[in-house]
Length: 370
Image 1 (cartoon, rainbow, N blue to C red):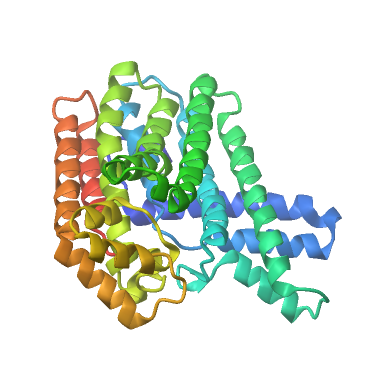
Image 2: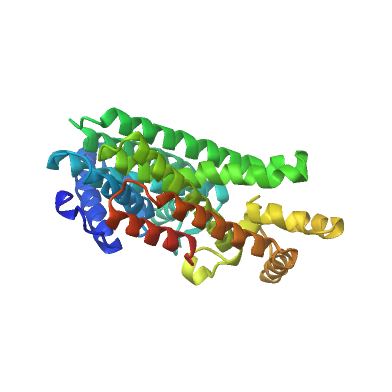
């Protein structure tokens, strides 16, 4: 199928369907291998499968677009080029692992409009009538479920790269992606405490470093490069895709920060103002603090991170952010990053139809409402 896709811009539905096919086959194998583990383990496999339902498949779309941008320039045979779909699916499994752990870290009750994995596992403990602390079980099981999903992601990546002549280059980029996002996630939770001992004028720089590591590279740049590496991209092509992917990723994360404060819960699947209750020290927050006088800043700091914020308090903080000028400044940053990404594609030695798809993906990533 991959070779027939050359020169044809894939629709979101085509990518989602292709990834779903790969995941379905992979899960069938995982369930067959898990039979010897017994029924309780089967329930864990089912929990892992549920985390793979839904989502925008953004990383898979960027990975496939990175492959398509390069594939016609490379002399790859069908067995090699079709590996990109397994890499796309591996990325989606790794994303599910990250979300399971992220929801646990953030004490989030929902994900994509459904119970977060640790809450679903807690519920299964109750439904089964097991003894002990159901909430503690849910948390512990979710840690292990996230680890299992990471292992599955590696398994599928290795399936994709079996006999592939460019396997080492793809593995190196995938390994870098795993390290970057893990360190970025640590810095994210650390900043919720570390901000208080660092100068205010460093907060924006620190927030943008976190955005780069935990999102910009992981969500956009590295999926692009992984797809291109599967297709045999040369250094010039990889540089062009990195120059495009990183600013798109930064704009993507800044949009996420805006949605975490102002998003419609009916669209995002998460409670309105969730980032305010969690105390996320984002670029939006750093810029808000810059625009407040000391008394307003102290009140803002006191309220931020209170898990019991009421709807009225959330509205007050939202109004404070708007009045500070921070929302306008973040929107301007998103526009600047998107423009830089667009310029990076000009004159790049990439497939023309894929360049158009990349521009469409960039717009969708930076103007989204969920």
